[in-house]
Image 1 (cartoon, rainbow, N blue to C red):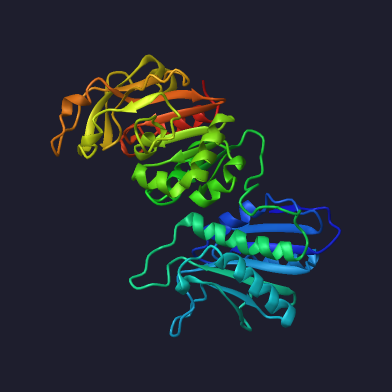
Image 2 (image 1 turned 90 degrees about the horizontal axis):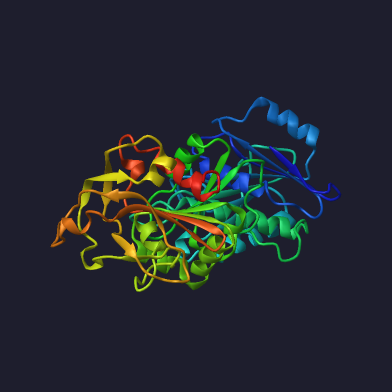
Length: 417
């Protein structure tokens, strides 16, 4: 639970959880908890179980809020024959409540391109779990309202909740003028490692990374982050950003010019960057066209980038042994068409350091496997005040090497030398 604000003005209680499948609304509540109202009081509560605790009703009575808002997710949009309410802002009041719900719908709909996925304000008696208070339910849909249907990305669902709540608090005059729903997403705690995982075109699922890192690094707090959020300045809330495997060209294009500059500025000003496979390509320098030029690394034999997928042998350098631990001799790393690199010889960027070398290679589709042998598999370097680590392969998918992922983040976040 988080309780913030100067206290003079409306008290708004926001909660999520207490029903199945509420991971994204709960993430949204945790982000909203970092907002600082200029008037009033914002209380954010997240429940991990599938039922609301009985004590919650007593707590509401004691708090006596002016508004109670539930952030909720259903698996699908409201549709005849289905008992689902995705894509709706539910209210049970009169005209004033209906107008608030409509404004919240408008705020999120400004980011929704498909007409079928638009949100709608709806008066629906009996749909709110907290009665006797002015209440609203902000209900996202896990799936797109299309046939065949597809899942929405986690970052999009979390952001939709934030956009609606931001519009609501703005209508109540509780936010400072010009406040952005994409900034101030985490509240710093002593020793916390705050990290973001890119969640957009060209990348797979972000949540497994978030779970693994939070479980492996004490105090780590992670969120999926969309290209739109990065372009809007959201990286300022974090210590490290991860760009995972997928397609570097798609990630590069999805960021757009503003998003790419936001990432570069984030690292230049002291942020950490971890790139895995596609994310490692993204750290590379010109003439590679889909790189952010964060490392003095050029791409070798890009014409044969689809050189194959499978196990390869790597060997840690002395620096790699210091960072990753006692992994002497050759180790088996899962390779998935990551970059083969060599120095780009850019004088304005410090030389990278090698943490691991390829000792075997893969060669399909006309690629020569020997091109990989003796080239770096994992490198790191500095960029401005920040740190950059790029892994061509996937230690997180390699039996016995899974802990490397945690070391990537600790080093990039300044927790290890």
